[in-house]
Image (cartoon, rainbow, N blue to C red):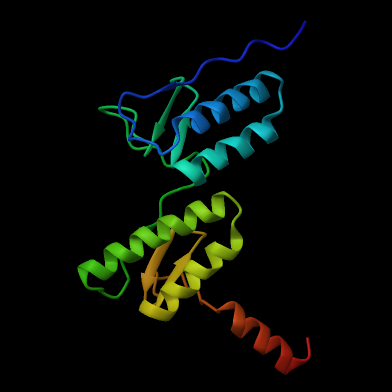
Length: 173
C-alpha cells in the first residue's frame, strides 16, 4: 500500500491577490506531496512559509487556500488553529483610536511572528509596543493592555530583554 495521492487545494473565490501565484502554487504542490507521504513536519513548515511570505491560509477541510484568510460568507476569517486572536483587556488604559488600531495590528503581527517561530521579531514588536505605548501583552490570556492592567487576579509585568540582561549582570547570574 503506497501513499495516497495528494488532494488538490484550490484558491478560494474570496481570496485576495498574491504577488507570486507560481510560487504559491509550487509550495501548495510540495505541501500536498508531504501530506500524502505523512511528512507533516515539512508540510507545516511549508504552510507557515505560505502564511509568513504571502499571508496565505489553508483550510484543508474545504480544500481551499486564501490570501487574507477569507473563505466566504458565514465563515469567520481564518486565524489559525494555534494562533488565537489577542484582544484589548477591559482593564486597559485608553489609547487614541489611531494608536489603538496600530497596537492591535502590531499585536497581530507579533502573534504571527510567534506562530512561525520568528522570536527575535516577536520580541522586538513586544518591546516596541511597551516602549512607545506602555503596552503589555499577556500571552496566557491572549490580551494586551496599555498600562499593563488585566483585571482582578491577572497581573503581568513586561521586562524588556535588555533589562533582563542588565539585571543578570548586576546579580552576577
